[in-house]
Length: 179
Image (cartoon, rainbow, N blue to C red; front, side):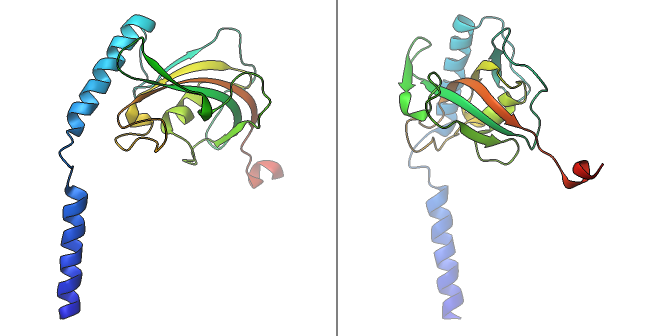
């Protein structure tokens, strides 16, 4: 009986701890992010329309050949990221999060649909082919949300990415090989 009561008190304490928001107004932070994103898009990409999830993507004309990337494919890419902070003309450069030009580093590998990367990047890759170069504007719901990345991306920050697809390894099943 004592163990049950102790366990119940421990669980109530854990629930109270995780329910505590430490006075942070997450809804206000999200609203501020969305207002900043709207302002940025009106200046940088007027008239652009987001996908149903809220992702904006801008593929460079003339880049990319072959089949569109699909779920299960492994994509090797080069990228650079920035976060949108304090105003539409104020971007914090995060040089350590990838290398776009030079190709002297190992490409970043993403398996589409495996959940190993942020949702906005995986979705953006679905609009690309090998060789495509694109810019992605990824709101926090598709990036790191209220927790941030733990590094340079804070809570409720929009991530801007420039991506170049280096190589696509198509997903193949055993039944496809047999036919």
